[in-house]
Structures are given as C-alpha cells and as structure tokens.
Amino acid sequence: MTTPSQVSAGELLQLIRSGHANTRADLLRATGLSRSTIGQRLDLLNRAGWLRSTTGASTGGRPSEQIVFDTSHAYVIAVDLETRHARAAVLDLAGHIMAEHTGPMDITDGPEQVLDQITTWFPDLITAAGVDATRIGGIGLSVPGPVDWEAGHVAEPPIMPGWDRYPIRERLQKAYTHTVGARREEGPVPVFIDNDANLMALAEQQANHRDCSAFVLVKVSTGIGAGVVINNEVYRGIDGGAGDIGHIRLHDEPDALCMCGSYGCLAAVASGRALAKKLSALHTDTVSGSDVRRLLSEGHPAAVRLAREAGRRVGEVLGTVITLLNPGVLMLAGDLSGVPFMTGVRELLYQRAMPRTTANLQIVISQLGEHAALTGAATMVVESLYSPARADARLGALAPSPQTGTT
Image (cartoon, rainbow, N blue to C red; front, top):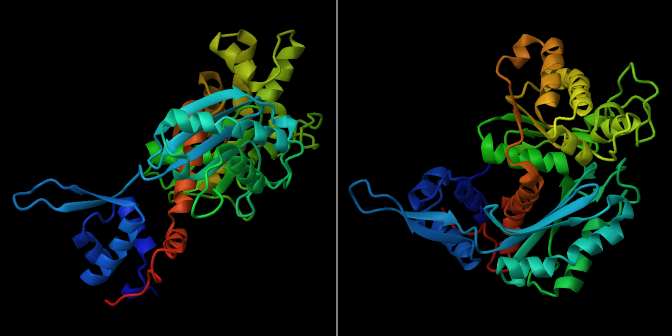
C-alpha cells in the first residue's frame, strides 16, 4: 500500500496531466502530502520545464492558481508506415500536428531502406514545424504488423518481409542522430513502436470516446487487424499478439491462401488485398486496398458488392469478439470502412452475437481518418515518456530522489 511520503513527483505529474488535480489544494487532498513536500515535488517538475501556471476562474474570491502540463515544452515525431506509403509529422505533446509529410514507400523494401528513407524527411519536418531539434522528446512508429511492444520489434509480420525481429529502435536512433545531428542531454532519442490498429484505437478512444471503458477498432486495409482499449489503456496480450483477427480461420474457405502461409484466414478472404485480387479477376485494375477504396468512392458496382460480402465475413468473426469483450464502441477503419462494408458487418454481427452483448453497442466509422495512427503514435510516446516511473527516472538527474521529503 502506497503511503503519502511515497507519492513521487511522477505520480503528481500524472494527477496534473489527467486533470484530476490542478491546484495545490487538489494535490494535497489527492495525496495526503504536506504543503512543503508538494512544493518540493512541484519545484522539481518546474525545473524540468514540464509545468506552467495559469489563473483559474474566480468564484467570488481570489482566483486559484491552476497547475497544468506544459504541452509545448517538447515535441515528438510520429511515423505511420503503410504498405505503399508513409506519413510523418512533428506534433506537440497535446497531439497537435505542427508539420506533416506524406510520401511513397514500399514496406517490402525492408527495414533498412524504409527507415533510412523516412528519417531523411525529419530535418525538413522539424524546420517546417519551427522547433528546435534538441526539443524532440521521442519518436513513435506505427507499423502494419504484430509488435512485441516491450522488445520494440515486429514479430512474424505476414505483410512485412524482412522485418521480423529487426532492431527497429536502434536503427531509427542511429539514423536520427546521423540525419538530424541533434544531441540530447538525456541520450539517444527514445523510440516506441506499436501495431497500427492498436495506435488507431488509442487515438480514437482518447479523442472521441474517452468515457468508453471497452473500445474495439477494426482496421481493414491491405490486411485486417484490431486494436482493443480497456480502461484507457491498449490491451496487447502477452507479447503483442492481441487483436490479430485477420488470421482467424474460416471453416468454409479451405483454398484461400493467406500471406502468412496458412489457408482460410479472414484476411485472405475479406481484406483490401483479397478484394483487389477478386476485382482483378473481374478485369478491374486493382492491386491494393487503396485501389479498392477508390473504386468504392466511385460507386463501382462489383467493389460495392464485394465490400458488403467482406463485411459479412468480418461480422462473423466479430460476433465472437463482441461476445467476449462486450465493448461499448466498435469502430471500423481503413480502406474498406464505408457504408457497404459496415452494412455487411451489421448483418452478420447482429445475427451471431447475443442481443445482450449488442444492446449498448455503437458501431461507428473512424473519425480521425488518415491521422489516427499518427495521433496514436504521438500519444504512445507522450504516455510512455511521462508515465510516473519513467518521469521519476528522468527527474532523478535534477535532484535527489523525488520520493524524499516529509509528510
């Protein structure tokens, strides 16, 4: 059990960032610390440059001093790798995009070429954002494959040949130092990596469904994956495998060869790549999910029909997912996430799931669109850098242990 004297500066920061305590009086009530100890902790956070003070609204007496997290004291770089293009941006700590660049990129070129390519964008991005390169606090990377989050590498990705367990974190740090040349007092720039569906789910839930304690996002583009957010935190499973629903086997598709090498996977039947292959067989020029998205926007009859059928197959699988997790929101995202696909999902989902588990379920389309993964990658960096444990470790160089002091 945590005693008041064990409430660290990092834990105070968490209370401030979350909005649960934004005055000294709030912090006193929330922690049980003495005024002097609160003052010591806040002095440490102020010396790091992480806080700023504002004047609160007056209720008749003297306005209270509000203590808030300074979201402009540092910046992050977020990168969203898709299969055929990439998007990178500089954001402040509140997730506001300061500068952005999108360019062609082929994920099958392998990690060295891709990572070196995207880091060449960073100097111009930092200049366009108008920030000092030494104030880049971290890099967040979104990838279209399973990620062992703790280890910081991709694990057996079906659509990312050559990336399996490649040391992405170390390569990006080295390329960043070589390309940008900025030296940081805290050492190499921290790099964090996660699956794109996880990061999209995190961004969408935080931005638009923060009160939803069980949130599921399903991305259907070149492949199919899901992100799950429980009580405002991404659920990744034991080693990053949670949400990989594209490789659930369908009993009636034994001849559908998936990129993972197995037969009958949902992704081999209902992904953007699968639909592109079916449309090509109908003499329509398509090679990827983005081509299918273009045809859907044009109202192409065969694309609309196939997207609805794909939605029904995904809806079959989601019947189990919804029954297991009982979420409040199911969000559809990616190239196929339009009306035909959603219609198909609804048809099968409501047939297969018990009414009890869908009675309070909202089925919606992505609201952040193409920026969801970028925003999620930035959020991942901020939540990691300023978590209580990591914040305390970073503050350790500025003063004696932040847990010293009396109550």
